[in-house]
Image (tube, rainbow, N blue to C red):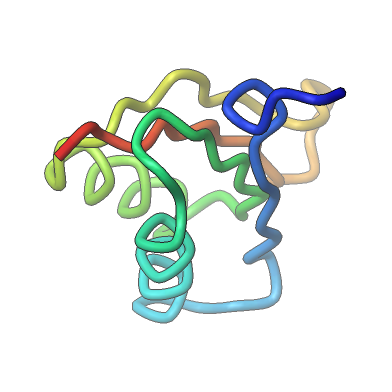
Length: 85
């Protein structure tokens, strides 16, 4: 049996542009229970700058942020844990 809080959910926003990138992340976070995680796949540039910052400003924890391929490509992975409030 899997633990939803450990397993989390996944959202790929690499085909979206700002401000739609954070709108999609925010809507998905609203559907999660406190403590659940959302793994997000996003592009470098505005999404990489804005999505983690906006999530933290809403009180969520940014647990991981790193390049998907350290050799380049510009795609990153972000893990957000939904706040208790």
